[in-house]
Image: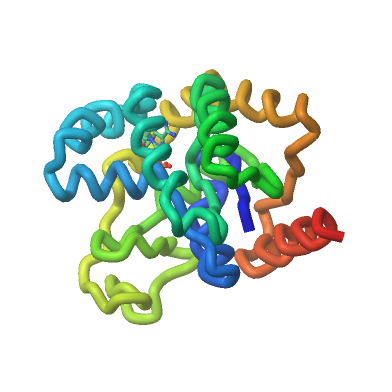
Length: 218
Ligand code: AMP
């Protein structure tokens, strides 16, 4: 499985990417998770990225492209990957073409998960994340089995990301319209993207994506 998941912040890319990567033995490559891990580990990249992320701005392309090139050129990406949150600018999409060509791991499909914008704001402002393993929950839609405790790793103390506060969410959506919508057009022009309704349950959205992948293989 070699897949790119697109969609506004909060449409469920991270949740779907984790499920699909696990099911199909692919690597889940989330640039947001990688940046947050760099911040947590106090790396120079993390220090540079934090200011942009806290404001809901995009981290400069050169930093992101160098980070993604390393992981996509690794042996594990050969078995399959699910890209989540990358590419977010046309410059990143162009760089990705070169990286995939060089590493000889072309994409099978690009999928755009579509959700109404106000629903996205509601989802993000209720999103809770496990700071230990990155598992994602929602206060109302998808709470953990035991309050404030991660189902996956048992960590106690789920957090709201700073950039999931409503004002920052609205700014992230503006950034999405300005920078990332042109990327969708880039893939549409190549006939390489399919829309999926992300307003359904997590299981239904996974099933829709898998059906599309099967059709693409048939
Ligand atoms: P995410 O977890 O994908 O919503 O990303 C959180 C934040 O990380 C974004 O708001 C950006 O500040 C930064 N980020 C993640 N991926 C990228 C990317 N591909 N290009 C630039 N900035 C990114």
